[in-house]
Length: 126
Image 1: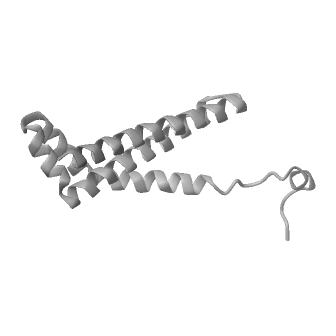
Image 2: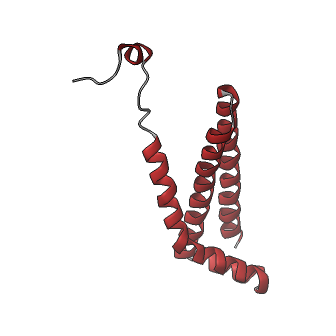
Image 3: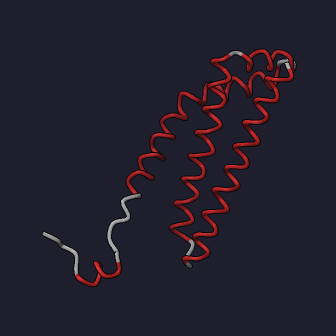
């Protein structure tokens, strides 16, 4: 039995089936950032007190490398999801909304790539 009106069937309107996944991923990344914040705190602590060679050797350890890379991925993905919600809620025109979401996703992808390259370069130099 179909509960949609003929007009909505003709327009192809209905549930987009993407809001739940978006909401869920935002919560998953928020929870993932809790243990991953250890690497952020440790990296900030080392950056404030330790020489560069010590930071480099700490970052070269496989567990620390994976932790920092995971932190970078989760932070930028979580931020992009959050800004997408803000844009969807507060930008009125559909064209501006789509372009803004694309620009935010592109900006965060480039920032994440820059951060990942910085980690790999610091490991490679050592």
